[in-house]
Amino acid sequence: MKATVHVTLKNGVLDPQGKAVQHALASLGFDGVNGVRQGKFIELELSETDPARARESLEAMCQKLLANTVIEDYSIEVK
Amino acid sequence: MKSAVIVFPGSNCDRDVQVALRQSMGGEPKMVWHGEASIPEVDLIVVPGGFSYGDYLRSGAMAAHSPVVRDVVAKARKGVPVLGICNGFQILTEAGLLPGVLMANAGLKFVCRDVYLSVEATDTVFTGAYEKGQVIRIPVAHHDGNYFADADTLKRLRDEDRIAFRYVDADGGRANGANPNGSIDDIAGVLGDRRTVLGMMPHPERLADPILGGTDGRPLFDGLVAALAS
Image (cartoon, rainbow over the protein chains, first blue to last red):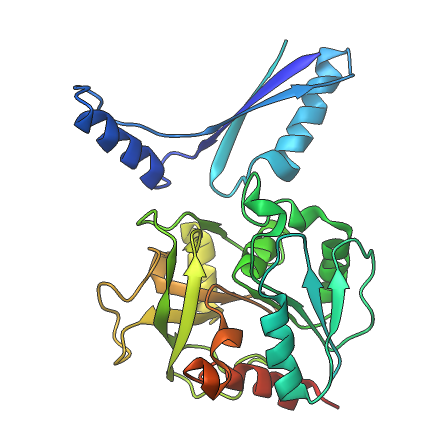
């Protein structure tokens, strides 16, 4: 089954890369972009077929490796 | 003193550390490849700088889960001193041996220049050869050296005197521009809770020989030998 994980910076953590993207958009003429925060998108192909077990496994993956929980949040989607 | 230097695919400061250790020890450190599940019995383990695993996912994230780092953690828990330099510092935070995290430099640029550090904690095997408050010149070379810890952790680090180095200007002052990466409280190096694990972003091994233009990094290695050689 397919799963996707979004890893994003926690609120309040400075995101200079997001800011840089925001400035670049402005200089390209795109008005009204009041904030940009950048994250990671990870796609996984799992051999697990039970969604609950997959989710449990993915939780552990995020806690252990995919996200640094000091500064990052994550959200999991199982298809 | 016996020492080990861990080498990952992508490490590139391992040989500079080897040279600095050899100079101070008068003997050869053991270079340990990341695939080894166990490190020999040593008095000091060094995790050197570089781009282990290409900084994939996050700097130090993959290295932190390699078999050799599992043994670094086990030995650190038994009290073996561990020194993490630059990527080594990143690996030690990802492995949970040090609190906090190293984020991208606030200025978004890779910074490669000499900085001045104030040695804040001198009661450790790493910093015993410096004076408290001594200002030393050491190079940095990093893209992700922006140390961050939450308010509780920062308070604990301050209360327990675990901030080992801070970025300062040449006169020891906390000026604008002294901090190359935006790290919180100008932190350049941090100690573990038993003061036997040190992580630092600057590279003492790169300024430990007059031919390199300075020797302010040498006392770190001399101090280790003085403290750990039996």
